Image (cartoon, rainbow, N blue to C red):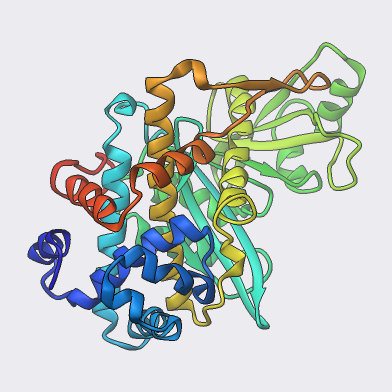
Length: 395
């Protein structure tokens, strides 16, 4: 017997098997409880989540086979069905993002590009991830497993963005990225092909010829000016790259002295307001925080034992949906009880942060609010039926 949520989804996605959808709802609840992506550990919670006499009598190994069959079907069945299931998960995720009316008009201005990599039984995994800044939280909206360790190439990024631009209306937004995501063809494609603004950190030893070829101070002079003038917080210069003018920015590195850090930060941006661009680059750190929540501080992404790109990408999509649900619940809680936002201050840096992040607080609330599979499905049904996706989403 199918649930109302399954029937509701199949009205729009009639080609998706009911068994797939039922297992999908089960996985969402199990991941939330177990806080892991390891199927061997998720199966221990299946009986309690299903909460039926039949499920209680079922052997744990049978629950495990159900979960593995789901991912086997995703990997080896009709690719169109797999794509449809990914589309469904993405639609629910984006509708969740669009459900917070308080953020309308403030969501969708900043994009963050980064990646996380590890190995599964010798197989190389790297999720190149595009996230959108959502009230200070980086929420992944797209990702791809590059199946390798190391930096992505310009071609890989350009080809991926060409596909993304058919699904999202990202034109006019600003992309913030770190030193791994550079390249003259990549920069040109961002502005001319994808119509994106960008703020990208670059390595200290590159593009000196282009900087020096443009009238004004040489690259070395810009750096020396910062060294001489302690009150000077930023220096910049308009330069020509591939026939397009960008702004080259140099500023002191607050982490200078760290073995992996330079004394200065070098940025390349399309923004005319160089000072604001330098200040906005720090927003990139939020995607690192999201990866930490998806891994060691949340759901154990690296515990995933699935092999094969299709399986891993499906698990990432499911995990991301759980993550977004927690973020939404955390925001709702802090909005209702703003005084509960306890903060702490680092006296060395003066930086103030939340004691309990939006995600961690939201995870606690989600576990309490959706304390049964039926309640979780009722919430998903409400989201799927009532909430529109953001304007920039074409799902």
